[in-house]
Length: 361
Image (cartoon, rainbow, N blue to C red; front, side):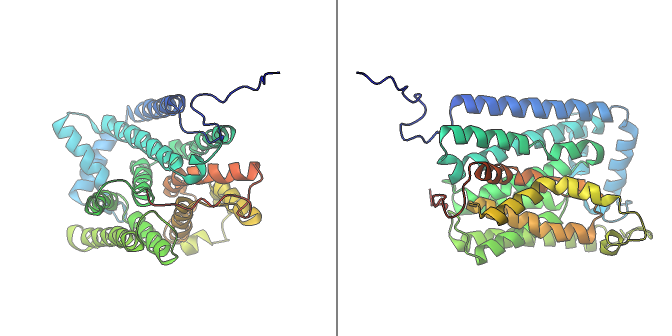
């Protein structure tokens, strides 16, 4: 008798590995479009009546009369001022637009980071569906913290993190000189918004090169990119602090180091529920990874290095209640969270998972 077993769909090879189809691309595109437009409408409505206050904020930063450290974050005021002069967009119109575009590009780059992962590329069709669903869900966790405490540089910082990690872990046909140029431009722009981020990213990349994490680039190239990011971040911060705005100082009631404030037990620790709730997906991910010895792609190792290196920076110089400081890193971790949770659900471990180290493309 003839077999009546159904044949695999045309876009799924017989051995079970599922490659991304046009339906997946369409679904992700609709998700990104819906999410970014929703963000734009909410932010535009929120800032609709804040025009005079935002104009004053822009002019104060550009004139150098704002206390540190906000005075050193001039990228967004410069960009808003440029758009106001050349495109005639008011600040309360340009900021939602910048945030919307940064969010859309961030989600796009995170999807590419997710898609290029060896674990996702080698996944079977059912596993790929689970991975995609978990990724889209994990990418929504950080946005819940955007609306109450977002600052203009939050989503552009998420874009920088996604772009620089993708640039390092995915080897394209671009010459290395062009890669260095892109890393320079990205880090320069980010340093004008938050200089600590490229410094931490550079340190994490240098550490990854020292640990010989197998990226599809020579270790010397990875180390050079890390050194480039860290040097640009540190150099721009010193330039702004010592040359451009030498008179900017911290307010008398705001210490430059917040570690003792975060550890002060004389006040009710109301910031701790916010801190642990925001980090809960990442905490669960690390616990699952440690307890079940789940497999990590090279890109996941770099992402976790960046997040874990930035945590002590946040606790030392920022307030724990200011979750928006860490929101860009939660976005960056969303592909890693999705892959580790999917591996846990499927019962995989580093002992049973096929070896999926990154290979040169």
